[in-house]
Image (cartoon, rainbow, N blue to C red; front, side, top):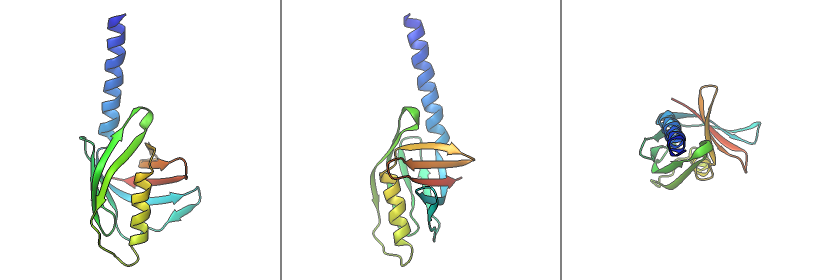
Length: 131
């Protein structure tokens, strides 16, 4: 019985580490979708870097940012401690604010059609990105 439990525990840990490794990388934002048919305009390149130690960083289109993330079972994700520089960029700042808000409200992360999707199920916001 103990061997079976240890085997299952090892399998779960191995599966979780594969999940974490699969999202690790440098991602370029391709869309911010609000509800099902409304997209927020991407007016400047936005990047999201996820490392295997649970740290994030990148550029929101105007400001550099950093923070942390935690990935749990069933692809649940939580981004925390997000900080950024405080420059104002005309025309870019509203998109950047929506991107940061999407990260802070994120609940789930998964792959769909080759894109990394960061989703907020309560407001229907998701962020699609590609490597």
